[in-house]
Every structure is written in structure tokens, then in C-alpha cells.
Amino acid sequence: MIQKLICISLFVFGVYACSSDDKKQFEHAGGSFKLCLDEEPTSYIPKDIIDNYSAMVVTQIAEGLVCFNPGDLSVQPRLAEKWSVSPDGRIYSFTLRKDVMFHPHKSFSSDEDRLMTPEDVLFSFQSACKPNDKGMASGAYVTLFGNQVQGARAYYEGKSKSVSGFKVKGNVFEITLEKADPNYINKLAQVNAAIVSKTINKNGFSEDCIGTGPFKFAEIKEGEQKEIILTKNEDYYLTDKKGNALPYLDSVIFVVEPRKLEQLDRFERGETQFLGSLPTSRITEMLEGRIKDFNSEPPLMVLYNNPLLTTNYYFFNMTEDRFKDPRVRKAFNYAIDRERITQDILRGQYHENGIYGIVPPIGTAFKGYDFKGVKEEGYSFNPELAKKLLAEAGYPNGEGFGSVNLRINIGDVNGAVAEEVSAQIRQVLGINVNIDASSFEQKDEDADYARGDMFRSAWIADFSSPETFLSNFYSGYLPTNPADASQLNQSRYKNPVFDKYFEMARHANSQREQYKLFAEAEKEMLKDPPVIILWYANDFQLCYSRVRNLKINPMNFLDLREVYFKDWTKEEYLKSVQ
Image (cartoon, rainbow, N blue to C red; front, top):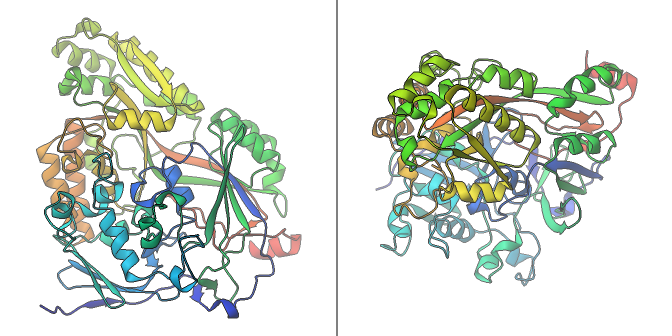
């Protein structure tokens, strides 16, 4: 049946299509933008990405049908020049660009062979709906397709030869959902919805990281600190509004450096141009000792006080017998003095609006969300109640409980917070918490397979909705076989009341109704907590002022297409701040 479509008009954020022959170079083009990554990416294959470190790199290389505007995080076209949604909210139709080429690769016989086609889109999405060689689901299947796209589950389970909800109609690619989801267009802006080449993958080169983005993967340079080097895509299909070729930069270099103090030292030596988070131990020294660098006209550096859509927390392994009792989990929550953590360790580098739920209480991002109601279900420091609950659970003063293994990834702040939490739990509850630090990749794998008692985690929003945080506790994302990895709901939490509200919210007709239902889901989760909420990130970020057009946003979404270098004159600077 042909349905009448509601068209969404094309919105292009400062970039326009242009043939390669017409492109001209921006007068300040060139240079290399260098920054540090806390951890090495765990994957360069878009459909498998579920961590921020991989996303930050691969977002520069691979693109989806739509993308986020780095200024306000609204969704805008990218590989699709426009899209429309059916009146019932279930069918998304994307009109694809015809001028997009994949990066050069030996698998392509000609430039024409490099052109992106609807078949590449179909292949990208359909291959994401297949189990991998280990029988595991991709991150894209779990978060985007499995429970949402018509026929995706049947295809995943081998009951059909294709995903019925994916259709190619000429130059239009169509996605049909099982139920309407107002957030779905935001979800498609995530990096695990990026389009890959059917030719590249069929030839066995899926790990070569070939995309359509503004930068190409060049090499991984080994050394004391590993460097991931990306270079300019000379064939990129977009230009700026004056017809200048994008991107402006010649290269982007990510330095893998987990040590925050070393990141700062590199920045101060001018080896990197951007610092994502100022080490807590150097905040006072940096902000007061180098005040001239911030206040001169023009300044040498720019300081961003950036509240992030990021929640730092520990989660319990819900398959561990001791943590199946909600009184135990509540006792651990009441035993934590979060003010000591935020003041003594973070030293003000956190979002100061109370610490209580998994959704960061940033009203500008989630306007209308019932943070007040969620706060009433949250936990504050109450050692006497913590002891009482633990005793009621059968472990007075921690007797007979045994020790707890806390898994964290190596990092200055991670270690300091873990030591403080361990000391507080021992002091209040009489329980020893043993800290086991490893690489992020190893910690994450062990969390997937529930190899540990408690785990450190930090969730950065994939899109601007409470859903991205709450999805970590939805039982619909658990594997059928308990022995398999649980990549999203790592705590293996099951709460039917939470699930009911979560599912209702995801298919609600309006944002207002969605927020109301998501808040109810969060309240239910806090009554039966699988987590200990620790703090919300509010990073002090530094950038040299000569870096122009770098957009800072609450999701740390990095769009480097229009970033360039240019020193300020005093006259130009004063004019810009008037």
C-alpha cells in the first residue's frame, strides 16, 4: 500500500555539493590537528562500535545517512540529501546523494567503482543484522535494528534471507520500523550506522577502515605512545558555503595516552592543540598560574567549562548471588559519600546539580524531564541506613559477605576514585573491595562476560535523549544464551516494570510523553538499583586560540571538517568579542 509521506525539508549546515573540478582551496587550509585519546579504539568497523574512543576516530572516516550538527546536536543530512517520514512514523525514506566516493582502495577498479550506491547502504545495514563469526550481535544490531526494524530479528535468527524492513527503490533507501520511534532519526546519526562499501567487504577487507568521510585512515604509528594518523580525503564531496574544499586540515592525529598529566604536558609543550579534560591535580595551578594566557588580547588559550552528557558510575554484576538482594545494592549506594569524591578528587570538575540518577540532570538538554521526581528516588550518604540494610540482608557489619572485586580501566582519576570508594565501603560496611585495574579493552570484555563483581563505567550520550542512558538496563538487550557477551546491558539487569515503561516511552508519540515515561522507568530502576551513580562529567577543556571553528558540545561530538589554524591579531580579536 502506498502511503502519503510527510516530507522533512533539506537542511545543510554550511556545506554544499560541488564537483571536484570546481573546488578551490581555503586560504588557511593545511596543518595537522593533534589531540590525545584516553584509550585505544576497540574497533574500526562501524557496526561493532560501542565505545567513545572508537567513535571519535571512526566518525572522521565513515559517515551515515544523517549526522549531528556539532553546534546544537540537531540532525542534518549527510549521505542522504533529504529524508521523509510516513504519517504513522514507521517508514523512513532517504534520498541518497549520487556524488559520494569511498576512499581509494585496491579493491576498486575505477573511480566509478568507488561511488556509493543504495546497494552499499543495504549491505551495510543488512550485514549489521548478522551474527559475527563468534555468534555475537553487532553493536548496530543491538541498538538500532534488532528490536526496531521490521524483519531484522528473523534475519538475524536465520529465518529469512533478507531484512524485510530494508528496501531499495531506485535512489531511495527505505527503513520500516516495527513501531513508530520519534528518536530513530537521532539514532541513525550514530557512528555504528555508518555506510561501508559492499565491494570492500565482499573482498575481505572489512578491517581496512574505508569510508566516505573527510579524512582517510593512513596508518597506526607504533611507539611509546601509539598514534593513529588520518589524512585529508582529497575527493570529499562537500565544500563550504564559499566553494572551498573540505576538510581544511591536511591531517588529524590521535595520540593514545591514558595518563592525564602527560596529556597536559604535551598540550603545554604545543605538541597537541586540544586537551579534552584538565587533570584534577593541576586545575588550580593551570587556571591561576597561567591566567595571562587566558586573559590576554588575543588569548593564547581558550578555556571551555563544558557540562557533558556523561554519567560516571559503577554497576553490579546482577548474576552474582550477593548482589541479587536489592538491600545489598542499596546499602552500597548509601555507603558512598559522593561529596568527598567530587571535592577531594575531582576538585570541582563535575556537573553540580545533585547526583542521583543515570540521566545527567542537564535541563537544557532534557527540558521537561522529571529530574525532581528522579532525585526523590536517588541516594545520598547515609551510613546508618547502609549498615541497617546490610544487616537485614544477613551480613551485619559485613560478616560473611566476603570481599568484592572492582574492575576499572587504568587512569589517574579512575584509580583515585576507586581507592576512595573502597575505603568508604570498608569503613561503613566492613567489606573489603579489591581493585583490579586493566586496559579499557580488557575491562570491557570482562564486563561483557560478567567476569567480576563490580565494574567502573562511564556512559557518553549517543544522541540527545534519556533513552541512550536507560538503554543500558533494558533486558531486551540481553543475549538469549547467558554465556554469551552482553555488550549493552552489561550489568545483566532485569526489571519488568522498568522494561514496561522503557518500551512505552520509546514508542510514545511526543517528546513530552517520552520524557514522562522514561522518567518513570528511571525511578523504578533506582528503587532496585543495579548501579552506584558517582558523578556527571563537567570537564575543563583547553584549546589554543589559533584553532578556529572547533565546536564544543555536551556529547563531545567532534566534527573537524571546517577546523583550521589562524593566529589572531589584537584588532581582529577585539572585534570578534564586541
